[in-house]
Image (cartoon, rainbow, N blue to C red):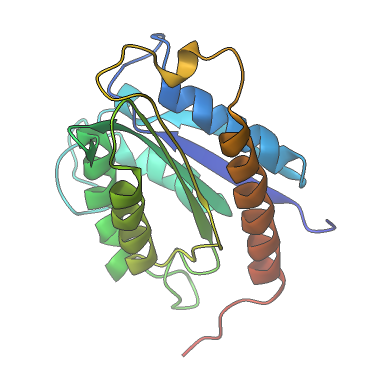
Length: 203
């Protein structure tokens, strides 16, 4: 644990602050587990920023994505959390993925893709099925733009269908979710540290 690591947990809830959010709660819990591996981080609620539609790093005008993008680029680990609506990831999550598409054409000072050597965890919460489908979309999209995906790094909770209980309403973390948190955080920290110490080769 000699190499310090950082994370940003991007919550893609539809609810602006200060509304309570299950996505924010799960994001915080993942960060807490990462902290046991020497990773420091913070939650950023995407909907609190003006994220203009588009696929460029800066869409101009009142676009606040550039500031959020800087925080994402500075972090070794991205924790990408979304609620489930109609079996899909949120519209906010889709907007973020579209903006990350710009990284396909961006490189660092050495000509390397901006998101190489960084890893991503997916978090999904909802009162309906769709977690595996959403994780597949998130992981493929994030891998496309350069993120490396650790083993078993999706953490999800599906409540009873058509029920009114949200993840944030639970009295404690369910055993299976706790196990997933432990595995995902441990594997992400391990992989991020390995990539920090030994980068992908320049081609």
